[in-house]
Amino acid sequence: MHPMLNIAVKAARRAGNLIHRAADNLDHLSIQKKSHADYVSEVDRAAENIIVQTLLDAYPTHAILAEEGGAQGQSEYVWIIDPLDGTTNFLHGIPQYAVSIALQHNGVLTQSVVYDPTKNDLFTATRGRGAYLNDKRLRVSKRKEMEDSLIGTGFPYTRFEHMSAYMAIFQDLMQKTAGLRRPGAASLDLAWTAAGRYDGFFETGLKPWDIAGGALLISEAGGIVTDLSGNQNFLTSGHICAGNPFIQEQLLKVIAPHLTDGLK
Image (cartoon, rainbow, N blue to C red):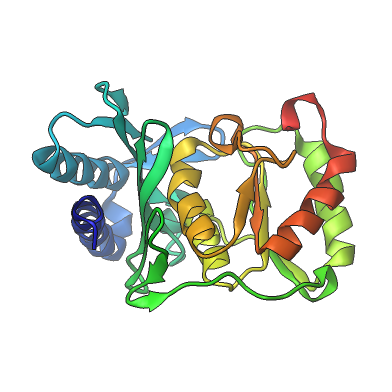
């Protein structure tokens, strides 16, 4: 395992252990509402602190971009961190959430960890070396027909300016696929796409820390990740379309007629 990935795994496992312990004590957590349907708990903050401390102990000159703490430092190396993706699930006792850590070097994603503490599923990738679930090599699915495909997504929940376009895409796909799923943690949805559980995935209005870890997993598992227009702007726009090469291309075609100015 690449040394930088090794440190990221150590950070993710430490955070995952903290989250797992806190899941038994949900009634006593302090929770704040950041905006409509967007919550942060003391667990998010504590998990982020553990991750940042572990990374900076090993690489003190590296920069951080994290959900709760924002941007810290300047470096050609930037760690992009979501300490608890799926906080709303976590707070309701629904076991679908993850720790996501990715490293960007000069703007290119090079290392990725998505860790699901409830299932002890550790998804990892290093650019050029493939993607893995625990010790098993990951490949995207081989399905070629949209009508046989299972597509993951996430509903808009804080930003509703693209709601009508999103619902039109959703309605279209509902009729053209074998099913749509929305479990509620984008990093895990992307990891599941890399593992071939989903054939494709799309979502709007995400943040870099929701996407970065999962995006490298998919590309290293032989899949394609773009924004909704088929370009590489997904980390900036927050709009993402991913999947195996056959289904991702077909997803883009279904999405194309519904694109609006802010939804590229």
